[in-house]
Amino acid sequence: MSTNPPILIVGTGAMACLFGARLAQHADVTLLGTWIDGVKALQERGVRLVDEVGSERVFSVRATTDPEDLADIRHALVLVKSWQTERAAHQLMTCLAQEGLALTLQNGLGNLEQLQKVLGEERAAMGITTMGATSLGPGHVRVGGVGPTHLGSHPRLEPMVALFRQAELRIEIAEDIEGLVWGKLAINAAINPLTALLGIPNGELLTRPHALALMTEAAREAAAVAAARGINLPYADPGAAAVEVAGRTASNLSSMLQDVRRGAPTEIDAISRAIANEGESLGVWTPVNRVLWHLVRALASSAHGDAA
Image (tube, rainbow, N blue to C red):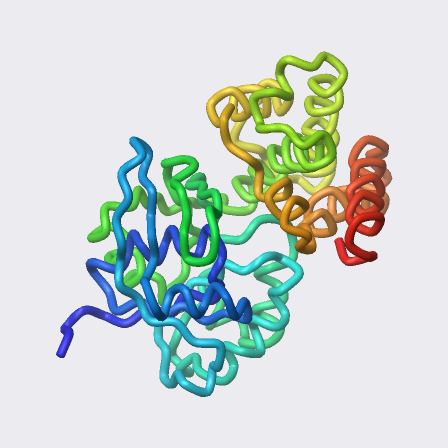
């Protein structure tokens, strides 16, 4: 019998598989998802991970579609899309121990609040990650970026931090996690919608002057909303930060572009729409983010029904 600590990952997409693979040698990993093909692939073959130099390894994990299969989970990592968070919270209600903790590393705004509403504040925590992954098929992912994961402080978080560090993940505890969340949100708002609309990898935004102008303005609008909320971003120039990230991840396909290409709902509501709505409530004008939200919704609805 394994002596490794158990951990549940809610999700079976690219990021869930990436973290599952990274943790599998140090924990008994179970992935919980609703994507039938993804769950079957994980059950049959495990996670197939292609690393930064193109080498592929297979990592053994468990996978299920039924939270009733699980019980007394103490450590859970939430890596579903933002529009799936409420469902994930109710799944966790079935299996998360009273003294357990669910940690979200998702994109966008509102994920922690949805988890707290269902699970209680004492059972939900938040972080952000700069790691990235591209889906190559069910249970098959390519590493898209390697970087630190920042976690907000929480009294129940230490065992997960220890596990992540044992797995050689770069973990940093952030005093101002909200500033980092908004910092990543501004970058996502700058890059993801435009790459999805134009169908291009991140770096190509930098070669198109009009796309570059929209990208930097979307980031600046997000920063203006954050400033109106009294939130300090982790960089001085949001436009320059977006350009730096797009250049550093030049060959990456954004998660939103991946969603559009496979006909899946996007996270546009939790990114561009959330910025625009928050700006409206604070009297901050965000025309670029609002138009990008409408365009991505229109793109998805024209191709796949109104399900962006």
